[in-house]
Amino acid sequence: METYFISLAIAIIGGLMMSRVAKKLHLPAVTAYLVAGLLLGPYCIGALDISGLGFNSLEQVETISFISNAALGFIAFAIGNEFRLDSLKHMGGQAITIGILQAVVTTIFVDLALIAVHFANPNLISLPAAITLGAIASATAPAATLMVIKQYKADGPLTRLLMLVVAIDDAVGLVLFAVSFGIANALESGNVDMIGIVVEPAVEIIISLGLGAIIGLILNYVEQFFHSRSKRLAISLSFVLLAVGLSMIKFEIAGVHCGFSLLLVCMMTGTVFCNVCETSEELMGRVDGWTVPLNILFFVLSGAELDLQILSKPTVLLIGVVYIIARSLGKYFGSYGSCKLTKCNKKITDNLGITLLPQAGVALGMALTATALSDGAIVRNVVLFSVLVYELVGPALTKRSLQAAGEITDGKTSARSLNQPKPPVSIKA
Image (cartoon, rainbow, N blue to C red; front, side):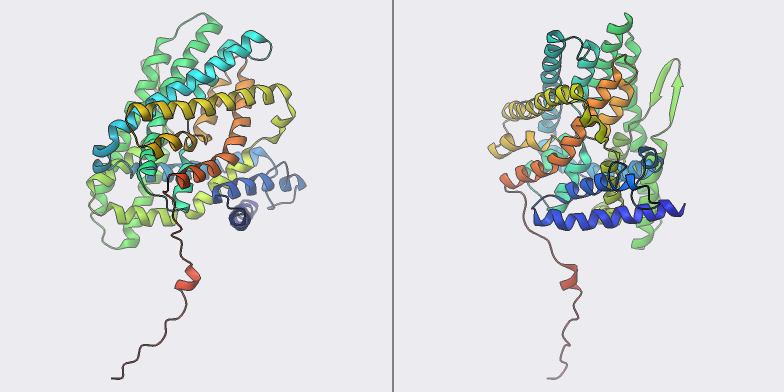
């Protein structure tokens, strides 16, 4: 047990120290945390096999994955805060249209590119794997995007629309993956499973939103019994952890496999709570402050999980490069076209697509499901490669796009300067 505590402490310290280097290079702190994870992971410092110094194996990182789940829950809870009714009235329709269209266009781009690779050389990738990767490409990682926005205190039309689109993207991605994976299974087995293609993803979205709404309402009710800031913070943290735990429950009803989406449950909890609680803004801010170390651990552990062995596989690299190029083009042109359709201003139209490039947890979860395919290993490895690239490059591109839109300002203050002793106040006349 002491090894884990030491490893977690080293992970936070390493991430923070690496962020000082990133600042000199004008890179987001998220990138620094991911690089710190790579360095502390099993392919670098962890390979020295010194107890407590880094992570010696991917299995060791997996053992403490509950920390990543908790962090993702708080990140989703914070994103839910963006779904306030006044924001939805102004750009709710635009966000839904853009969220759906950019995801569909991205899937089409990647499908066409990888299907072309299949017909050019069927030995490289099977048709079911190509179709499945197309759906996985639609997923966007909300965590890296939110961290960049928080670090640079970004605010403006692009930032607010981005948060809504990223949240909607998760639900759309679930549907696209279920349909594509169902088609892929049908191509392999010859049987079409309409329950898996249509019913199960719809049930997952509905029960996730329902569970999140219930937790949000109960949180609002219970929170009213407490008046001190510390106790209200404690009850809020407890309910987010409750939402994370309940979202992991899986069950079966009449042959339908039912499960929850952690992101959707926690986002809906935050959405309902922020719209029914009059003091939610202040409380959300306090929750954000408390979760800073947890978020650092999330990204350091994400970096440690990146499997560098895939870089030695030429087939994975070739298909991975095609996947990354096609997905990037799909995200950019899908967003560009849908922004034009919904009459967004030029700054949003030109920059939104780039901010949607980061990809991580949701895509990895889909890839894990896809390993059931006969060619599932290539799907998982390609997604691992893309996550390695997107997580290291994506945050910097997001920062640049927000800067280009004029929504990043240097609003930082130094805690050291704020904590300097104040000069004595004269009470003499």
